[in-house]
Image (cartoon, rainbow, N blue to C red; front, side, top):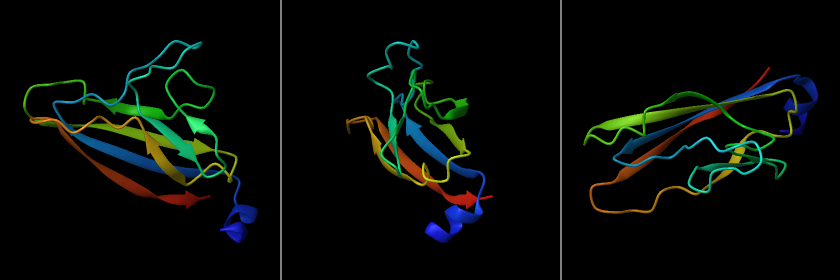
Length: 112
């Protein structure tokens, strides 16, 4: 990993959360991140979160639709600090309840 970081000027990773009747992202204000939104811990310990200094790009947020069908929220992480990726942990995932489900699709890290 150290060798890849030394040769890279940009790093990209995508994470998709597939969900059934449960929300995973709520944009917070710039002063206070939403307490219900997922948070992502970077390789260097920093947090990507709604309303935070570091935020993922949210390409689609269809998990807020609760109609008994599967939807997805797409997160993109792009940074010029090669020490921020990969994402090593995800916090605030919704609790398991009957009729509410989710699963994660974690993409590879691309060192550019």
